[in-house]
Picture (cartoon, rainbow, N blue to C red):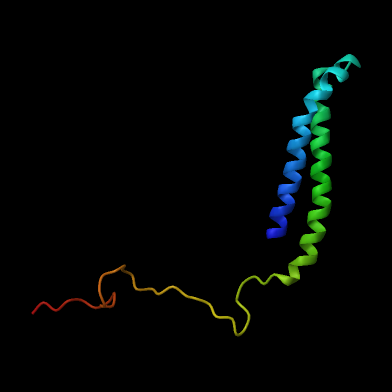
Length: 103
């Protein structure tokens, strides 16, 4: 999971940096005759290329690492802390089903 978060951070940074640097190219592209729709599609195409490249890396890595991550029950010999089902918080030592005597 940590590897996935690191990969997401790298891809997010790359996309943010590219988006930040795109306006510097706009005057030259306007001079070449690009319309607003073409500039928008260019930005979307760049983002799609980055996303596709990230998916092409993330999916095989996830498939290769999935056998190493256990889901469900813990392995034999693993200590698991289980919560106590007392039903009350900080109410003394009585069990939840015991009632005070009426006598």
